[in-house]
Image (cartoon, rainbow, N blue to C red; front, top):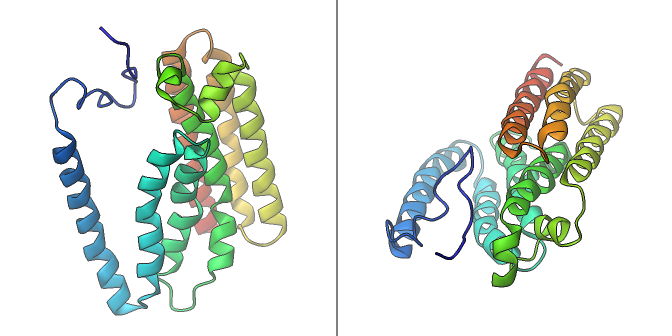
Length: 224
């Protein structure tokens, strides 16, 4: 049997189409239903505040197609990170009466790095060997192809994420208490230590770290 994307701790749905459990049409319809549901809530905000949110919502929706194309063209990490980071924050900012979209974009950069180039690179690195011959071309594939340590690559990205937060705090974009999220270096350290020896354990620590980072980041921004 041809090897395909591996089932992971956080998802088991990669082979649903290949296994014949779902058709591409059903998957497309399912995604469009969720997109339509989100459009309802965006419509409410557009009606109450400003129609500008439709523009950001539309660009964010297009990130899904950009991501699929980007997996073969070296930029799926940027697509996912842009959607998870700057665009998500800008969507939230669009619900405010006097939105500062530049500040929102900058505030989303740590999430762009951590989700786009951290989490996504690990995800693609896991599947790089069977998928490289199929045309997979992204950071995860490049790390595997060049025999680079995924742990060292992740350590670099976590460091850059934290450094970006320090600059954003110093520039007044983020509240000082968002520095609470730096506590996530502890589970990130365990993730880095386990990742190449015990992938499942490393990924579990990584998931815990990335969600702890998000919770503390948000809490810090709320309390100032």
